[in-house]
Length: 151
Image (cartoon, rainbow, N blue to C red; front, side, top):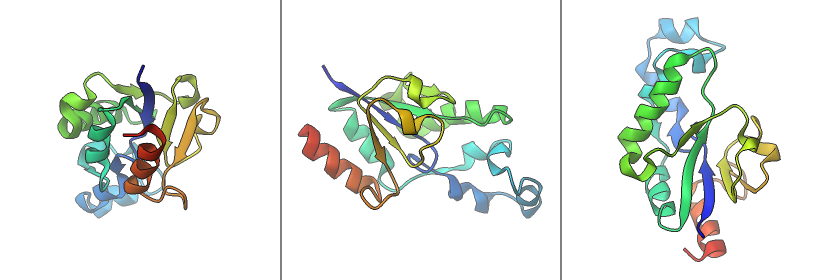
């Protein structure tokens, strides 16, 4: 049976910072301390380098799901994350988006996440902590998974 792997969105699949140049200074100032609450911000983001190709490769050996948190005070984030998934991953992520504030409640073998918040630190499987010395980027993650899973 294929192993289950969860992939976070923000700063894992999606480059959160890529939205900022597309926003006015007025909006950025207004939401200075809560940028993830900017209406429509998640629709403006670009993929992280190597993320799309890596996710597609994962579909060949795993059951990959996108496991992300959407800001509670930004209702457009929920729909924008779905639309982003459809746009960039299409059929490869069909009905594979899970939005939760408690990632540890999902059962799986791996979680690729850049943070330890929202339950990532108590996920029952292996947390592949992206943006760390061991896993600085997608190529490092894929090298590790290929060696471990014989992809």
